[in-house]
Amino acid sequence: MRGIVNIVGVIAIIQGLAGFAGRMWFDSNWGFLHRLVDLPLPGYLGVAAAGVVAIIWADSAKKREGS
Image 1: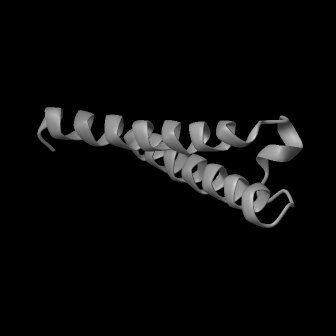
Image 2: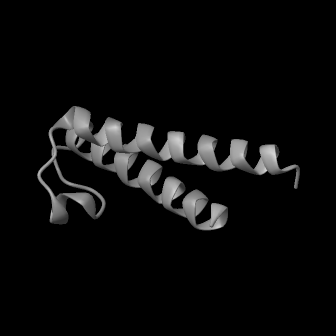
């Protein structure tokens, strides 16, 4: 389960940062998120932050179990 959460977290970070960079500096939509939802510019950073939180959560759960 933690492995899946890590993968989803990394994908969220990539999609969030790519979407932010594409709209901020290149005036185009990058990534896959713009095909699903119409996010404002800070929303992409929120997606990336959620990915970071998911990775930290999965890593702390791994350390709690002691594996």
